Amino acid sequence: MKLVFATNNPHKLNEIRNLLGNRYELLGLADIGCSEDIPENQPTLEGNASEKAFYVFNHFGYNCFADDTGLEIEALGGEPGVFSARYAGPAKNPNDNMQKVLEKMAEIKQRKARFRTVISLVIDGKEWQFEGIVEGEILHEKRGTEGFGYDPIFLPAGFSQSFAQMPLAEKNQISHRARAIEKLVRFLTENSGIATQLLNGCNGNG
Image 1 (tube, rainbow, N blue to C red):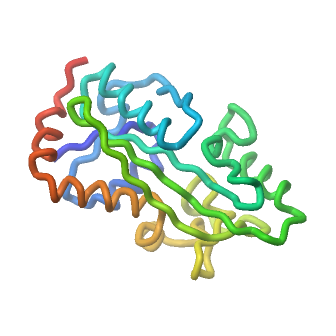
Image 2: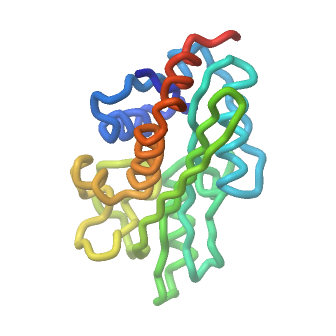
């Protein structure tokens, strides 16, 4: 069964392909001929995920799912949150984003944070959303070279390695995105009629 994931991020595609295994064939935006930047103009993760999923459905005719993820730091009032990808500016440079977080947190002892992912699944114009959260804290420096985004400065609760120090398989057992995807897959498994609609809606009309 095919699933369209509204992203051009190869890291996200690879991570979710690993999560889905051989149950689904995951297609990215490039696979359906979508090269434009999909709008993300909403003030919440839920709103952005919905906006992206409906954009693909309305412009390309594909049933699909989209996600939005934010790093929410308690001492910064939930920042960077919905602005995580562009926290240091429109260039969306992950190193600049991490540096801005580290500078803001330099004198702060309370470093509690969480990653939160919201997935929006749109099938024939109807929407369902799924949330995944992982608690942790912000490190004082970058650790590791795996992963992407803020992974090098995020230490998940109960672990001694940052997300960027973990093998992908280990990260996928506990990550926010993994937990949201697990809920998505469970939903599709328990609703065979929805899954059939998804399969039938993968040919596109745009």
